[in-house]
Image (cartoon, rainbow, N blue to C red; front, side, top):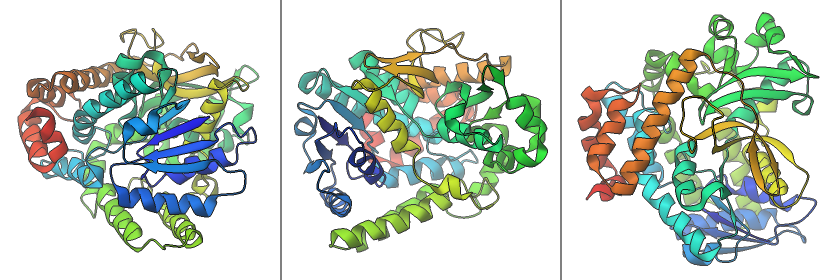
Length: 439
């Protein structure tokens, strides 16, 4: 089977390649990497050469998207429209106005979505033309929004994935002295906006036990992010990105103390790709060292620089979900995964076609949402407000209407109407790929 990876020059692409290389069923025989940046594409190609074994899928690189997707059985979409310079602007423009600056949440997520939706729609049309039977796995952020936009062209064959929910579930299970395989997770919400409300073992919810155990709860990353009092008040464990909603002022203050995450990654990756060794083994070793630094510093400011546990530094989330999904949709054993899919009523108050993040049973026919745990009224309210913003951004991407873009900023609970026009003007001035959407 041919696997196409759009955004094949991305730093995390080797994680996916390693997962398919180690797949005991060896379903993927060819990996085609597509990127608009030939230098990054060549660099990632060298890293994959260092990973290759005699049974590894062969790797082809191309700058032509139609060539990449033609005949593919699965298409992974991991593009970053505007590059890391765009991410830096997403964060800094908001911070300069006193707002939260973050890649997927608030003003930055809207700016990222506005320039990405038109590109995602073009990709979906290319897949429809060149590989109509392919499964499309979307990694591109904001993942729920982009998945919903692409589903408007390709339907339910587009599935969004994220490693945050599974990492949260793994930490909760570990804190209870259990393995992830031993529990059923009751999780619901949107991408980067969900809550773990149940951890069931043999039909018994063990989450109350964890919330009552101060030592175990405080040892989790969520205990450090949110504090025990808030978690107990909620009766749930939020996705780490809800830190930006529950402590917005603190998150803004933390972001202003030094370089933003985008600035850190931009410098790190520029240095990495500029100095990447030509020899495949050297390139692989350099990538592994930079990956370790990247993982160790993830959300460091929000964690008050508390070190991450060894288990949380081990890879297996993002690429593990991708491989499990690929296995299930290509005829392997059905899997239970938390995915971004059309909710079809899984969360009350949302449209039938609204993409939500919920547990699904996945088989060769695709993902099937399981009955979702109930969210509290204020959680439902926040989900509804943020989903309405997603849909405004998608509509703006379709129509290229700046008034809809401004309306999306105005409607977001972390922004507001007084900032909408200034944000849109500032982002258009800083990010050429966003400006081009409305020119």
